Length: 321
Image (tube, rainbow, N blue to C red; front, side, top):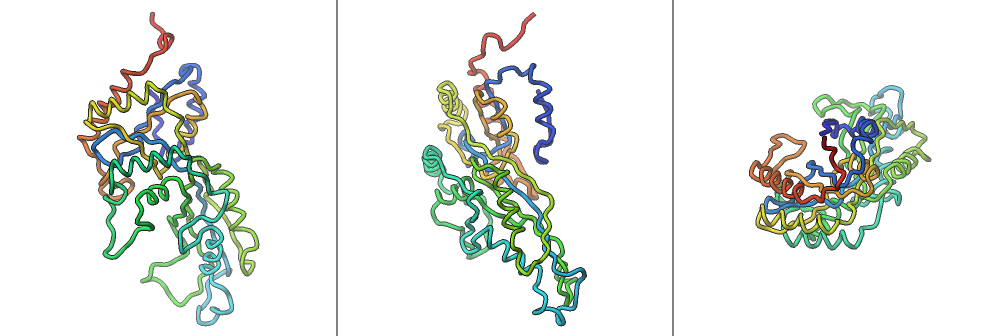
């Protein structure tokens, strides 16, 4: 049992541990990860893909010090406007489409079929847990398109900002700089480092007005696309779900990232993967009132026990003395 406890920080130490334990682990045949989620609490959900990520903080500087906005606006461009123009190179603001080819990838036909089946099995699961203001619409009325947008298409989120005072503290000042934290989610099969390089080039080449651009906090992690299930595992997953939950197993394409899954897949290319978890509707992950459905977590534990019991143990798996 290896407890690494750094997944939310990108698992920087896990590769060293795996290398240190290589001889002990030998040929890994099954990897189980319980850090994923479910579309509902009525069945076992198998994660078949995870998005990658690319993150960078970008700062645009137009002055060495702030100046009275009444005196210099219209003469010196605002750092925020320069940033807006740079963001337009990355994303179509009217649609949310990420424009860089290096950030886009094809959706495999089998994954598209699985998404359609999952939407049919749990209609409304994508939107059921959302709390929207009155009159707010989603980016599409097609639930399959929503799942694709949240799992197999790249997105840009602005997750932080600096150089912007709170409205109560704001004055008539043309600020010297603005910093934004750009967080890209990438399709599972995209090379995250190539995507980050393209983002870097787009932000620093031919900058409007010759403004100074600096980048920091760069991070890239590849996504993950599951290998084809072995016959024994496919049948076991379905029977475990039916036995424990009373409903057949379904698959889920997850928009979040578990960076070490790609690492484990590369380290153990012949292994089978069971990626699942108890993160479901109402779990409120990463926000206040994060919670766990105890009944589902209990049943999930039972289902994992069924899978482990069915695992075809190689003759030399254990050394007995």
